[in-house]
Image (cartoon, rainbow, N blue to C red; front, side, top):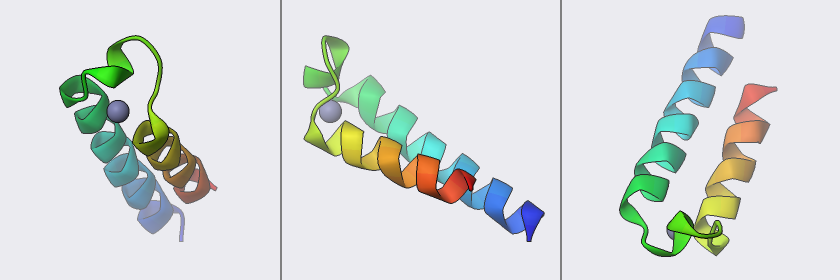
Length: 46
Ligand SMILES: [Zn+2]
C-alpha cells in the first residue's frame, strides 16, 4: 500500500537523518552506517 510504504520510507529517513546529525564521521563523508541507512531508506521508498 502507498500509505504504508510512505510511512516506512519516512521512518527510514528519520533514522538516517538522526544518525547523520549525531555521527561525527558523517559531517565530512557518510560512514558505513549512514550508507546502509540511506540504502534502507531508498528500498523503503519503492
Ligand atoms: Zn555516520
